[in-house]
Image 1 (tube, rainbow, N blue to C red):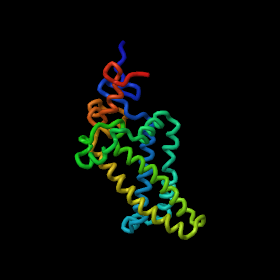
Image 2: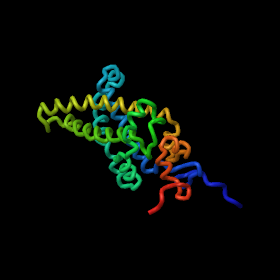
Image 3: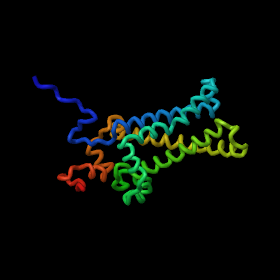
Image 4: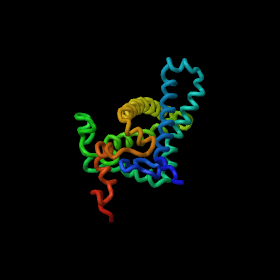
Length: 223
């Protein structure tokens, strides 16, 4: 008796699909996103009196906020053990010729008219670089505030100033990131399942879609 056709899985792609993210990459993104949101929400409840009154348990909020901040780099640190995560980090860390001027064109004309992009466009690379750098700064300044006896008063004052204002900037950028994600259902589908349609990839990440084509379809030649 013939077996029923297999459901689409991590190993099975339809001809009109591309593998965008592996399971490891998706879990790094999800756990980082959850930890980041916990840190942002608890910070809002700590700094805004109107929200603080709704909870009341300030000591608990402080503890959750401190640990969510300290653990924020952990998902990526674990993800570095996977080849796919390291490969995409290299992509994010390198600006290619097509990235020059992309962000400016995107602000003026929209992302679809900003020019061809690889797997990650220049906006995504800039966002990733800022989040990575600011996370290290937030962890460092947060540790100074967590253990105030380890630093002088002027250092603690500077750390508080940087921590508070950088937290505000991060919150605004994360909201912008979420807004962009909600405007692109196919992108969300790719992060949720790891698969995207070739038509979407050809439209939004032209150069990456071209790289993923088999050689006999016009893809890059082998070594």
